[in-house]
Amino acid sequence: MLHCYYHVLTISCISKRAKMVSVTLKTKNKGIIQHLAVDFTGLKIYSEN
Image (cartoon, rainbow, N blue to C red; front, side, top):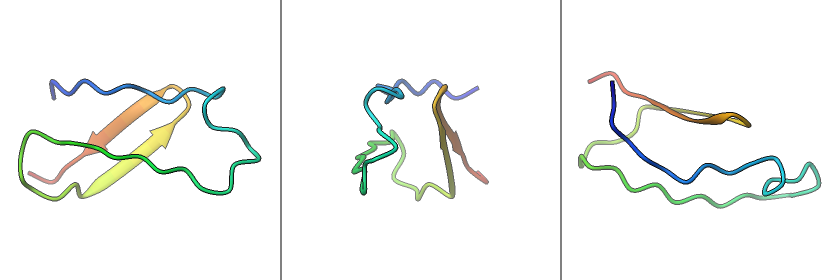
């Protein structure tokens, strides 16, 4: 289990009318995030490592 803690954007923060959303993520490791899935229930990070 990854012990990553992030502030999660909610449906009130991301509107259907928004044209662009800018999110900056800081990871503990220096590797590249391979897969990133965002939904309205939270943030999930998938890595092949």
